[in-house]
Image (spheres, rainbow, N blue to C red):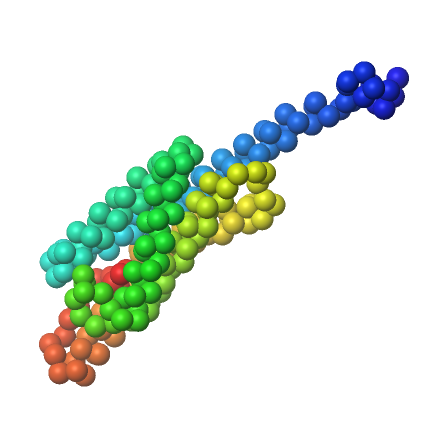
Length: 199
C-alpha cells in the first residue's frame, strides 16, 4: 500500500516520525541559544564586577553601579539559561540601557562617573559589543516560531566574543597612560585607574 493510499485512511506515511525529530531539533537549537546567551551574559557580568571593584577607591558611586550591573547581568544569565521569559525581558532592557549609556559616555559624558567624555578602548568597546549581541540573543530566544538557521553562527560568535572580552580583562587593558597624558595637557593632576571605564 502506497503512502498516498495511506493518506486516504487518515495516515500520512513517515510524517509522524519527522515531527518529533523536528521538535527535538527546535528544542536543541533553542537550548544552544540560551546557553550561548548565558555564557556571554555571565562573562560580561563578571567583567562589570571586576571593573567596579577597581574603581571603588576613586569613583565609589560609579563602582557600586558597575558592581550592581554585573550582579544583575549574572542573574539574567542564570534566568536566561532556564528560558524564563521574564529574565529574557529584563536582559533585553538591561543591555539596551547599557549600550545607550556607553554611547552617551563616549559622546557627551555621564555625570554618574564624573569627568569629561571617555575614550573608546578595547575592553569597553568589547563590552558594548557583548551587550549588543546579548540583546540580539535574548530577542531571538523570546521570538516565537521555528529557530533560524543562522542561530548557530550567532551562538558561535557569542562564545568567541565572551573569550575575547575575558582575555581583554585578564590582559589588564587600561587607559591609564592615555588618560593621564590628556589630563596633564589640560593642566590637571594625573589620574589613573586599573581598567578603562566601562560606562
